[in-house]
Image (cartoon, rainbow, N blue to C red; front, side, top):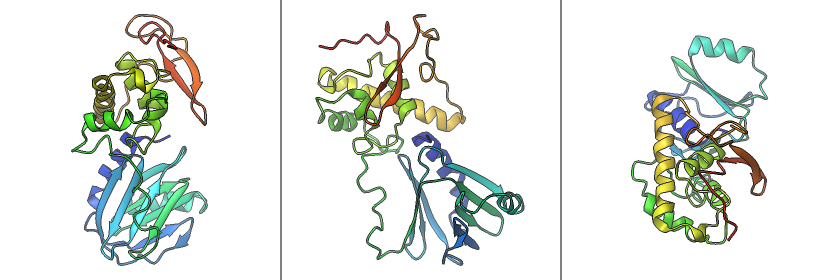
Length: 255
């Protein structure tokens, strides 16, 4: 699933869109009444992307588990689109020079200013872990409001802090030497803050380098890069998500 770092990269690629005029917009092959509208702002918030237009219409995209984004020149984009089933083309935005294509995204909402759902796509989310003003201490305090839950589940709760998914849940807990099954109540507030700060640093590095350097995620039975013990995998949460940890560096205590 695209996580907050992936969506931040999409937003960065869309920066040249600001000030551009839409020449064509479609969702699943259906034309939308956005021709002539000017794009005023593109913003990532956690795993969500919003595009604001000059008439205060909002385009909201969530890529879900399998959604993909492509940015192409207009000519290359039109050629690609001609070979793509309309049902897979969740959103197409074409300008004079470029074509932007979202594939197989479960959520694409276009809401006029006065529509009941305008702005609703992100209003229940917690602070964005990659936002310039993100406060890891505030994230820790929000997490501490869920003392009986496992830390792995709280990190995935977008209402607490937005942006982390299964990858950065696993990696931040590995770096902080905390077992994912640990109850939040057993983790001091400074350690909770360190988890969020670590996640932020790892995700920002991913945005900057366009690479993910992973130590534990999806490394079942491979040596821990820190101690050499074999990484273990198990399922946590509802719905269950595969989770990885080092039994030596991240010891689990049920008590």
